[in-house]
Length: 456
Image 1: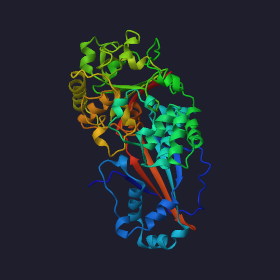
Image 2: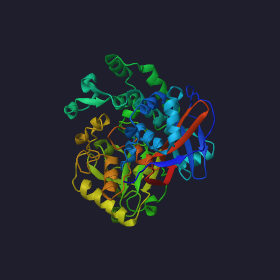
Image 3: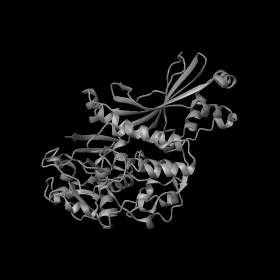
Image 4: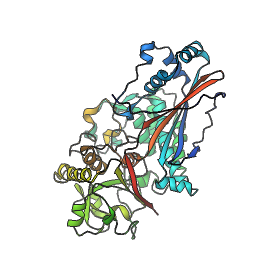
């Protein structure tokens, strides 16, 4: 079976153990093809020492899987172990008391991406914001792992529709804390941590969350505006006559003046462009031509951004995306016109023709991976439709996976779609005394390209 992990071995080096205690998320490396940024560092010495105690057969048991989004550190330890010489393995085991292992997690954003262009122009704000979100998520996974808690620890008033959650018993703690933090429900977090007797404090979580808030992006406002369902629009478009330039199946993303979504991230809405619908409905950017799903509140916007049937799977206008704070257009890396037409057809036949009522299955924010039967976002069916599920499913049925699975539990968020356009990697450094060796593994390979991005 093909291994999806890219493997790079760096030259042998000699240095003392690095101090990661005061890491400030400011390491940016500019290469010919990408902008790289380390967003998280961790001393994993104890974890690696436990690995060294395993029998040899388990050390070499690399779990080669088709979906590299779910590789664990132990999988990567095994891959690293297989690359060592027998002499190096013996030395590590014999000197296990002196061994250290450090891990860096980072992003590689293509040089042509608008974020990279901003960095080259001296503005790192958006890259820092992106890295801060990844860093916060990584901290929560590190602190809480796969720990689950009883849903009864959350107050009923926290849920808009309690009946949607009745089938849940245990929910993933890291995802719960992430969602509660982005909604700044610190009292609920404190109650949960106290009930669990956790060593992690609210102040520790707030400290990491504040790194996101400090960046103060207009589209990532406080709890009050995040909860707002009405999005303000601009009078002018970010891209005039944009529809004429789009390929069938282009995924459009937008971020408004106000946050209009219940989850973390930079993007608030998504849809998939249909050239046939664009031409049929007038060939202008106010034509209904972007398959998606919208809440009933979408009927309150300006006339040229209102979808054709608010509250259901529907068709957006292009102005829905270009008359906001930011917009982006992405295509799968393996795009072809045939695949694009197929994706659009799936969006139409699975979602639009079914005329399902708009519904975000919010309980999927908290699902542990093993509860896949309750994961409707990836079932490739029309039930519980929301904007980014429509775009994701259309392309998945056409053979391309553009869900980077970065945020929001099992939900497919607009940020998950955008994040499929850049690579993620982990760098491992092991050593003892004056010997060390470093590997770099690509743990997620980009599946899409950003073909257009603009902001105000």
